[in-house]
Image (cartoon, rainbow, N blue to C red; front, side, top):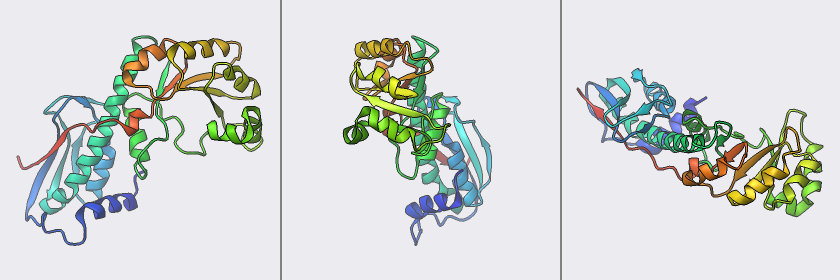
Length: 271
């Protein structure tokens, strides 16, 4: 849920304490318009901005809708001053989120050239304060959110293994988690994949492996019923088909959120 506190922070950052620029009289109509093709997202956040300013949103697209230049994503009507105050924050949020949704849709489409069975997932490499917006954008693009925060799943990473050893780290966290909490274990060598599965991993994350090494690790996990294989580490959209063909269950991509360019959107008032 997007709270009034979040929206107030966004607006305070942009409007400041003495806004002269938007002191415009009268009523107007505002339209959020696409300047390039992509996938719409972040419109719930944009709507929350205008709702906070008591500017009614009279029409909007559903997140996940494919858009072309000139398409109208959202329309508002209200006091010109408040419409203009919400404009930049709404455009920034929707543009950022739509860029993430577009990048995610590209990755999902690339995966489907090889298989329908692999999920494209995000990571926790999100912008502080915007994780909810960014994760919703991933879903709008057809991806999986992965864990939303540290409480959703235990990930045994290289630093944990450095401190406690592979088996020791898995045992340590297994004792501290609920039966409903999955354990995802990061490995960097093919031979460590079955070790992690034997020690109790629900998911084995094959980190920074080439597609060939990933394929070998997936083969090593074939006898471990119910254990998922996840590929991650510097995977770009162009790499997705090669990784999808390895047989992994999940491809996790930090670039969906930390490197996706904003989609070019424009806000226009009047008729």
